[in-house]
Length: 528
Image (tube, rainbow, N blue to C red):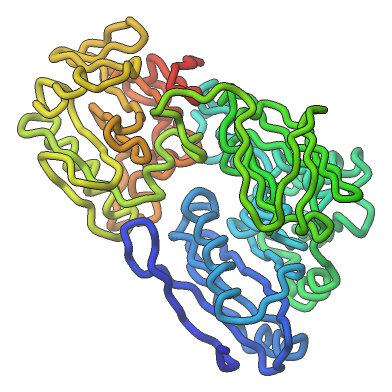
């Protein structure tokens, strides 16, 4: 049991192995089971810092507060999301937390993080309080990443941009009590976007004062509506509801806790899960699902003793209490099947140890060194660099056959992967791209270690940002990889990307020649 008061704690991160901090406040009142509020900071905020007044309220109400770090300014997505979920588990291991009373609260960057994470994981959170967060991909992309006068992202990343938007998950407000607070004069995240969301929720009958509550602050600016007493009073009235439906544009969030989809036939299409249960029988309706995992231990109480299962009208027998079951609904892909979570292009590389496999010499070695330096600055930890692959970890392999003799092994790999490096370029689906003219980034599994991934790179487009002056912007294109990069990108480095609406950052996709993603068997689906 942790003593009352504030504690600064760490856990050993899966990425890089370095300590990852989080702040924890334990109230003075001892309880058999505590409610928990995870507090997500705004841009540049780090771990949440509670005021003396905040702590007195926590003491009076007997609530545990936790402030994850979120890997810095990751907008509580990708690694930032991983951090929130990990801190939730870490706190529950230290204190008796009531799993039916776990909440999210945040402002600005933390506001949209609290909204999106609660709706992405409706089986984990009872309620969320979102203050002054951004709402839609249209708003976000237009304000920070688009070229002047344009907002629409290229087709290859449009789905991933929208998946990062809270509005894409708004149907889940049926299952998670939601408080939306904002100032009507907010000039950072415009109130019109939140008003649009509220109108959409009202059309679904959710803006009823119970499931969704809107708190407008007339004349208030960015951050208005975050008064701590109102936040806690709203959250602590809520208890977890068991979700009966989920719609996810990526596999990472195709999860109701007791049932999740691990593989889908079409990686560009949404996964839908609808569930009903009664009298020891569970009925599932699944769309775009090729493989599912069932976990009765995480099911609603009526199903924890085991249940009979029907999927899309077909009887699948019984699932035993406490036993995890995996069901294949379509034929299995090759041994190099794309695994769960590898939906966002190189995003999986950011969730495990990795190394940069350097070219032996030449201009591409300098480019690889620049890439590794930016990546190291972005993560804040060491980057392994080598001339040959190590025994484990993901790989970033830099260069082509001319620059990197190790890549000659590619042609010897046991299964065709649809991408073939040549001494003078690369071939994708029979189309040749000369190394002198094109760069590329292509994600694949390692054939001798399919659970690991390899990112083959040639060329690196960088925004001219001084990391010492603006450390938050280090490797802005690296920042975008986990949530808006496809599996395959071929670009023309001779094309100068246009300035974004936030100079000196550049719209890197202007130089794309070809982009796409892979299905479960690593076949290409080229979309631009």
